[in-house]
Image (cartoon, rainbow, N blue to C red; front, top):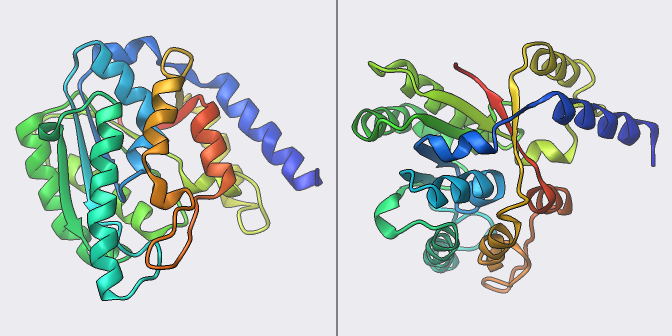
Length: 256
């Protein structure tokens, strides 16, 4: 193990060990989860969703894009992938205890969410004003994937427009590849980590009671786990999948 990897692992252990444990609290609050692509909701919040649904809480999952760019397919392949990922989303969220009425697909073009950010913020503001969830979750604004960062910025913008203040949390997906410390994050990652620890802004949800169900939900995303689409094979990074499966799920509090 390189020194950088060892320091990164130690930093993550520190963050998780000092995080607030909100596993029990998950049963007490209604939730809206914003996923940039089909699978982000399960990878980052599957346990949080399962615990809320077990307690009878309202859970809404909003998926911002159609997920049709993951394999770099031509237009015919994109049509096939768009339908496939929507079907995988339905199957995965059913594993998490949701019904079709709990699922909203906005259908923005995969990979182009930055160009649709203001429209997405308006859509989210209207949804939040109608549903009024206690807590709202999205991928982290620190994520390297532009769709993930754009979704977070749009949601922050939407929350500011509301006449009430849901608690807003962000969850890491691609951050697990090299955050908080790497050659390209030596300063920013360290500052982010220190802010989270010092401000007690990190929280966790443990997967002990729901791990098997979450793993079944993740497994529904076969197109993202190596099944070929239009002759092309893609797979999520091992670090992302390992973190999703082992837990705990980690969240960064943005608003109180």
